[in-house]
Image (cartoon, rainbow over the protein chains, first blue to last red):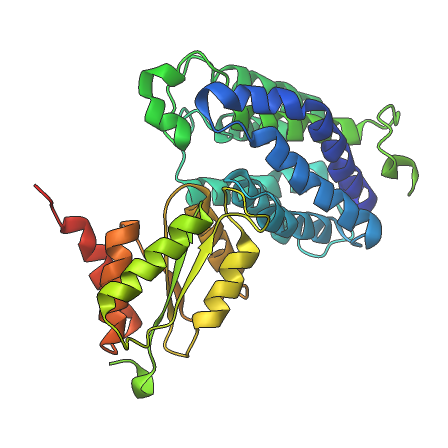
Length: 211
Length: 137
């Protein structure tokens, strides 16, 4: 079962990963976006991490609801309301249970992904974060590792697509040949979920050992 | 007419603080001197950069709320998504706050002029949305 410690670890691992990958995310966002994806997410997840350390939420749902709200208020770009809605709706779907199963998380995450689709109006194949999240949620019923692989595959598969949402959509044909930054960061978020589930604790994200 | 002569408030959300402030100034100017419509810009990020700030949007919305509702107009991208996310939250924006689907500048002028007549939120929204049909050629 997954408790609040697990979910706080997911957020901490994600914050560390976003710090590590910020330059790559911004670089992906340069040819087809406005070159701020990495720094925007860094700002958001730093705020999440600080809030988790300061006042650790006691339930899985509260961790994600609080994190989502912070992303909406701190990111400053479209990824704020999108990731914020993803986490907040997932958190709300988890309710106030002290522990949830992987299957329950998969179900809640599907609710979150549906809310993101509704908010941004994106469908699979539009070259967005949805292209990584939908296959990840489908695979999460099997295992964390399967979700990670599916998200990564989904992100890579955005490269030949033509963008139909967001700033990149104005570029038309020229958006083809670039991996979507949003799908890439979404795959990172799912990879961090798999990392957080790694019982070996190989990923030391501070909080991982803190309990 | 709005309730008890109260005026609908207008919030203008742009990626740029200057754009939001200038469009607010223009719309108020075209509504005529003496227009009492509360109009507030919410432009850029809190540190003055290009982007969208949920905090600035919430503060601007609260500042123009006179009890007759608040119409929010946005430019694009994160401005639209942030307002939608705040509305979905439930308690972040004043009661009867609505994201109005309208062209930013033309819609702002239509909204402010309409609100200055004491029209209710639905009428303000309709006038702003109708600005999409205004052809220039």
